[in-house]
Length: 335
Ligand code: P6P
Image (tube, rainbow, N blue to C red):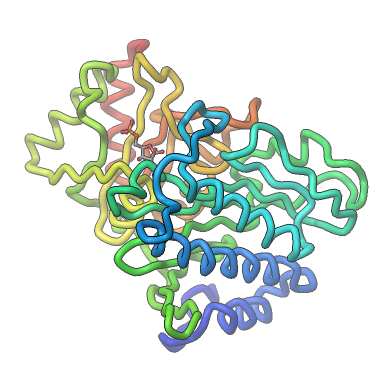
């Protein structure tokens, strides 16, 4: 299992991708190039994010996206930056973005890959200077290269991902990704414009004592989940909920913990989207030895039926996700 190969900390992302490509014989390097394209866009969005307060690009953009959420200017900028980088990179034939109602067909006859992306998740946190993130999934198209994009190219279950990752624009900016051979984290050094390997072969603790859920919705939760939350309190777990999925997920990945966005009366399918939030983080969680379900079944096995469909999400330390699932099973009732 070469994912345990030691690479010197200080290896740049570019060098790491090249070394990994040699190990795994990526088809002729297109996926490597695609990962570099994403990293480039992340560096640009990082710079825009850091300037948001100064360059009068914070605050609402005045339009709403497909979710009916007020688009923040940075949302729009991030969407443009990632879409442009992926278009210019030449490896992608279609993009599914939280910010676009329809699939973006890049009309790229040689593009092998489909990218599903949330360009800037948690963007309501921009104006209050809380960490935000980009989340992305990469699939190989299933219809012949060069032919028109078909629904089956887009509506693939998460277990078909060839890569997935997130960028966390936090106290430092990190890019964390997997190609199905373990999870590796890179920290950005703005003065050098490089991501450096800082978290090699990340492993999620199988247990933890952090639970992340919006308890303001407690009375909308099904009985089993209410019982699980009482169980967490009885065990003196720590409640940590930033309101920014990537930040909560990343902390729980490192320290152990569970993040829950469940079905509620207001959101019977939860709030998070399957294609460009849950699937990517679930792939990463599983590659790090963690687990991700919708409370009952494996997220990665869900067959998508709608572009922006939502799913409940229980994700993080394996034993905690299992335990929460047992509480739900014991009290199975409809919301
Ligand atoms: P609530 C941000 O809008 C987001 O998509 C996630 O980043 C975050 O975890 C969640 O929604 C917060 O939602 O309903 O608890 O405010």
